[in-house]
Length: 59
Image 1 (tube, rainbow, N blue to C red):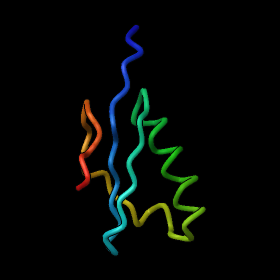
Image 2: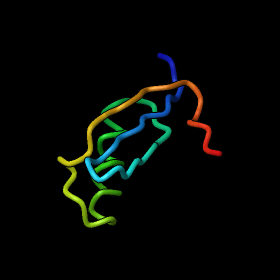
Image 3: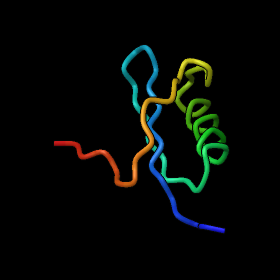
Image 4: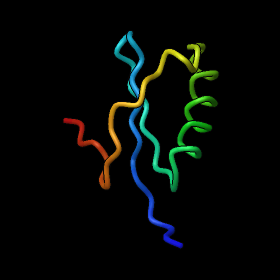
């Protein structure tokens, strides 16, 4: 069984993007739920945008 991690990026309609390094989509969804609660945004507002091997580069 592989233990490789991917980066999962979620975006809310407001433009808020959250990205997590996780071993599975299920793990990323759990992390998204926690972060959305912290931000006061419903978890349903975030949609999966990308799954990558490397993190998104921000300038």
